[in-house]
Amino acid sequence: MSNKYKAIVFDLGNVVIDVSIEPACAFWAEKFDLTAEEIMIKFPFDEVYAKFEKGLVDAEAFRQHLREYFEIDFSRQDFDTGWNMILKSLTSNIEDLILKLKDKYRLAVLSNTNEIHIPVFEKLFDEIFEYFEKKFYSNQIHARKPEKKAYEKVLDYFGYYPDTIVILDDREDNIRQAKSMGFEAILVESTPQLKHQLKELKILE
Image 1: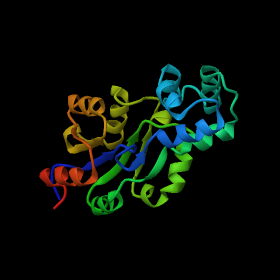
Image 2 (image 1 turned 60 degrees about the vertical axis):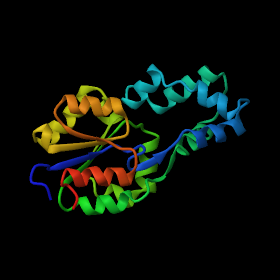
Image 3 (image 1 turned 180 degrees about the vertical axis):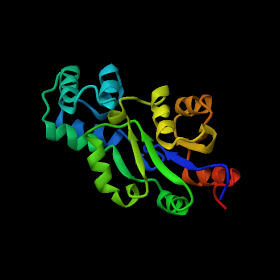
Image 4 (image 1 turned 120 degrees about the horizontal axis):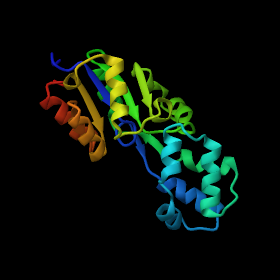
């Protein structure tokens, strides 16, 4: 165990959980008069989406925004079924890695997410979430990465210097922000690559 690092903070999407919007678009295409490709290209990752992830608009307001945007009167069930198909499975070998870390470091989650997904992934992958002592979900802390406020929530909770906290994320903009605030940060491309970099930091043997 490294004497320097005290906490490791995991992103969820494509770090702990494999995610993809493609299955959702394929499902919606069967329900709506659009192709999966059209939905994927047109899907509005816009201001309303950002507010949804920050908990500033609720799930029904987000659904209604998409109904108006796509000009389709879909049901709550049809939307939510597709939306939750974004959550595919645990990332390969991530559970083994977390098990190796859990007794030596404080583990947490910092993730941009929403009120529809949280109860679903916490139930689907409950065996993983018991190992995280704290979950910083964007819709609950009202801040999205790479906003500085999201990382400040982590610092406030742990009370550690940022260079003793390791941030794991699959997005370069989030990693840049973390590094600019003094965190150790790793851009995650795969679990084997992540393990290699953790060994370089002497976090793993």
